[in-house]
Image 1: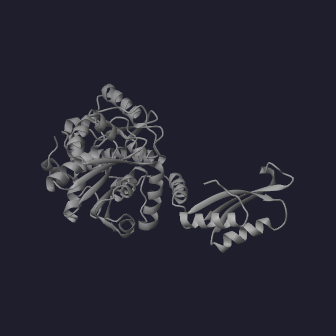
Image 2: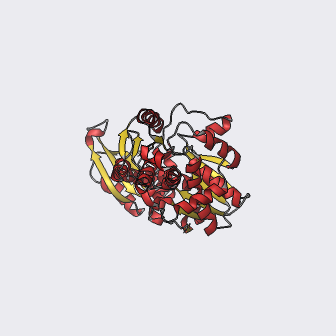
Image 3: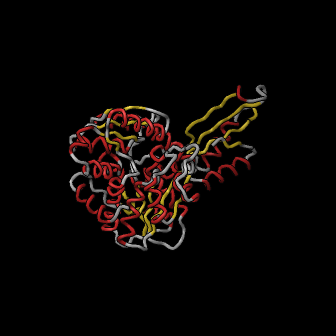
Length: 400
């Protein structure tokens, strides 16, 4: 089992290698959810995620002969870049097997760090199987993304930093995939303060460790489906399962829609860009409740491509009630469109898109189909607009 001494030794190895990520106090999340909330922004870490901590600590602990044979890893992206950079810094050659679905920003970032990239499978577990095959075929040393004691010790250095900066922290919220990050954090945090709560957060579409804890053994999910590709793991680690079972207080699940919502809030309120998996710990804030306390949400990474950012913003706006789209059938006579526009203007709804189409109506000769997208200020504002349109004689149908 990994100990606090292993984690302290890892911190020494990482000194001068990783970037400092000081806590950011969030007044917005504190006000909204009733706790004193801090963000641990590992999205600002070198390579854009926490994974460099565990990867470097593990590779640095190998002997020269092992490193000279070459390294191999499987990853959905962030571990890949961590291994690639660590290998480069330690003069070793690395091969990374990544799922074919990995965002381009992660595959290109890994190549730019000097690693050979092999694309295999649609999810992490399939890439993992191919990496294990290449390990045997080419005599390489496998660097596990989470189920390795040196990797876990490296990730645990995050807890040392958190509790040095915020000794009276009451709860640490941690994104969970295979369990390496939360394992290291839980061991260090509980060693320093046994009363602190460590809570994991998984997507509803990949509740890997929650499922294993409930069944009291390491279980493999039949499938995973989540936008949080960085934690889309079907099977947790054997080492991480034992650590989580012993040290972690609870595991919460959140939906993909909640991830989109909190992605938008983090971007708007703190000007921070996180990947889908990175905001898991923030999305859990709305499910905590309890006595107000100091909470640290670990934002684990920020490697996300621009197209995904655009889609996340759009969906986040819808989920927060900031965009409202509705359709309505209008009599085909002058003034109807103007009347709808007047109602929207009277209620400060800014029209951002409008489709006035006679051909969409079932009764083309007498009615017109109108679809309107408006910028709104939340669900209460949407309710006011809906009631005003109904009062004006318009029966609308919500599109989104």
